[in-house]
Each structure stands twice: as structure tokens, then as C-alpha cells.
Image (cartoon, rainbow, N blue to C red; front, top):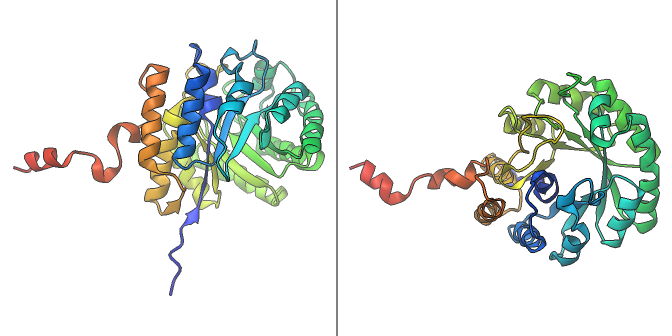
Length: 315
């Protein structure tokens, strides 16, 4: 008898970091905690909670320590945080994160605009972060931003991704890398090319995908990732997010839209979609404007229209 088990997919929620950091109006700490706890209650078990950057650089995340101290910690939850330097790594370790994430742009121009350093200096600076993470027994993951294209330089050669992945693996002993579509330039063709190049050279590395929906093909790229065997995807509640250094770059793919797609396609996420939609609506109320998520507005396909309305339309 054929197995009916569904392939499990890991959905990593990045809205509390990647999404919130784009908001000008400060979100109260207790609201951030409520949203993270709501995501946990909906079944999400991997959340990028915050970033331990300088409060001057990202005032929205100045309460990183307080948020980490207040959120629930259910069994199996894995909390990560973006860590740009040794000082941030020390704070992250003190806050008991489960994973530190370092990232560098594949584009020289974007990296200089983002962190005011060339790529080489950025990568070398991660050695201190890696040492702190190792001493604290905390996992370290690596991100490659603008992996599928740069708004300033155009296409990014796959050879650059390979070079950076090798550095992460060989110099920092990182086993998981995330490919970031920072400004929504990825297409099915570029996704396949990047994955193919990396698998040929660093087949032992676990790859995650981080898509934005700037040009409306974020979920199409997810389908390509699934076909290529990728089982780890970042997403942001309500579709929050963007890039502060690229005008017009909209948010990440929406978490509830992604979960709906995966569940309807026969994959297992462990997420309660109705509970997730409720968190998305709460997040929208906290942010104070309409968010781009679609499933939040339409509902799952079998509940697109109220039953009474359908009966009335049918006569």
C-alpha cells in the first residue's frame, strides 16, 4: 500500500524582524510579543524574532532584548535573530536565541549601501560572530542577499553565490544558507540556475529560500523550489517587508498565502491556517494599514463566499 505521508515543509516566519524593521511608527513591545506568541499558537515553530543591530541604525528593533525576554518558549520552537557583528552576537547570546543569522549581499553596491562595507570585509567580520556563537553553543546560519539580482548592478553571477557559500561552509562552519531575493528579482529560471550551481559545488549545505513578491512571482518561485526539493522557506505575516535601499521593493511572500499554497499542494506545515489568518488580521490592525496578503482577505478556497450568499446567488 502506497504511503500517504505528506512531505513536511519548514516555514520560517520573518515578519517580526524583516517586516517590522520597515515600519516608521514604533510598534509597542507588548504588541510585538503578542504577535510572536500568536504565531507560535498557530503552530509556527521557526521565527526570526528580531535583529541585534544598533538601535540608532534600526530604532524599530531597539527593544530586541525585551521582546526575546517576554515571548513564549514552547517546546520545539527555534528563535533566530539577525546578528551583524560581535556586539550583536554577544547580545543575542545573552538573550538565549537558538540561532544567529549573518548575511551579506552578493552585490558589492548593495552591500556597501546596506552595511557600508565591501563584501570581503563583511564576510571577514563574521569570524568574530562565529566564535561567539560556537562558544555559546548557538547555531549559526548564513544569508546571501540580492542572490537573484541587484537593483543597482543587475544580474548576479551564480559564481558569486558559490564563492560566498564556500566561505560560509569552509571558513565559518555554517551548514545552512538562505538565498535572499531582496528586491523581488527572482524568476523560475534564476532560481533553478542558482540551486543547480550550489548543489554542484556545496551539495552538503542545507538551502533555504527567501522570496519577495515585488513583481508578483514569489509563490511561483516557491513552486520551483519545491520541484527542486527545497523544504525551507521564509515568509512574513501579512506580506510585510521590503528593502530600505531599493525604491519600490515590496514585502516578502505572505506567510498565510504560503501556508495555504503548501497545504493545498499536499505538503505538511504544521500550521493552523485559521489561527494564522487571525494573527495576520491582528498584525494589520497594529500596523494601521491594509497589508498585501490575499488569503487573509479571501479566506481558504472552500470558504471564499458565505454559504447563504451562494444560495441567494443560485436562486
